[in-house]
Picture 1 (cartoon, rainbow, N blue to C red):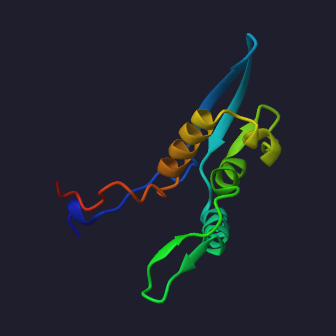
Picture 2: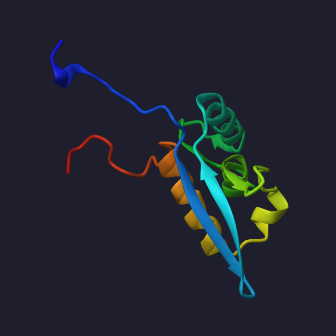
Length: 119
């Protein structure tokens, strides 16, 4: 088998440090990649929020918790506890969107990007 046919992975979960500052106080968090089972649970929950029309076209039926559901699965306080939905929902939308995008990329859920390698 030639080296070009070899796949090699580091299977340690990826982590990204996050700092949130409010009124001059900075709190540290960490975003942690999901394992396969956690990713599947998120995708199953996401599927429940979708609707499919008679032509097979899908769209989101309910946006509630769409971003916060994934963020809560991947964002942890310094003590290792996952953040709550209430905490995430209380963050500014620009912060939620940035966290969501980073988590999507970390977990290979960023479906909008061209993965084919073709430009």
